[in-house]
Image 1: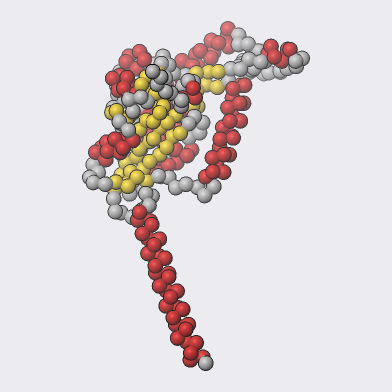
Image 2: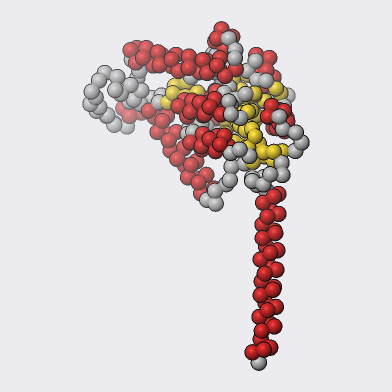
Length: 305
């Protein structure tokens, strides 16, 4: 009886081995076809997306560092669709791009909008590609304060504030700005404006006078921006890929490598969106200083005939 069982066990073992081999072959085949594969069947370009308001820099800067160190990645494309946002994160991304371009080519590909801080980070790249109808520019600084003192008075709420200095509650929603407050804010805004202008002069190799002449917050179409020297090429994302290939000396097909998605991506997205919304409400009450275009959230621009 035991002699009869041995052939059955042998067959089962053989079937198991075959299944393992076929499974491994399928995994290898899927990896070869995956855009994020590390197998060397084509040169690779890393893709980093900058979407929506810029409120943090960690995700983008860490991905830049990762692609910069990855020898398989030959160049990087930044897909930008942003009206800008907080100043410090924009500057952190700009700085990381500038640290990357001596090692690998970086191309900025503009989508619907790449204005203010969105343009700020694009200016750090080797080349900028925009659609003719991309909304860009908006070179400037904006500060917003919400005034609620009249509302508080109507509903009988009185705030009493103790402070260590005259300007500690500057921008508080329960009082108007004084002339001295405005002088201090004006000085700070102009300093940050100068930082913006200098970043474009440095990144785009334009004259200070030329950038200052258009750094009044106005927006431009991609076609206008090209005429002004703010953009290098007009085209779509696929054009940006071809331009990046040429800059990096890549011949033939390329594999576009996107950051690996988290298993909890939807949860992370909802959490991040909720956090941004709450932060925006709080910031609007206390005042914000940003490189941000304030038009229609920067995303709903349409032609009408």
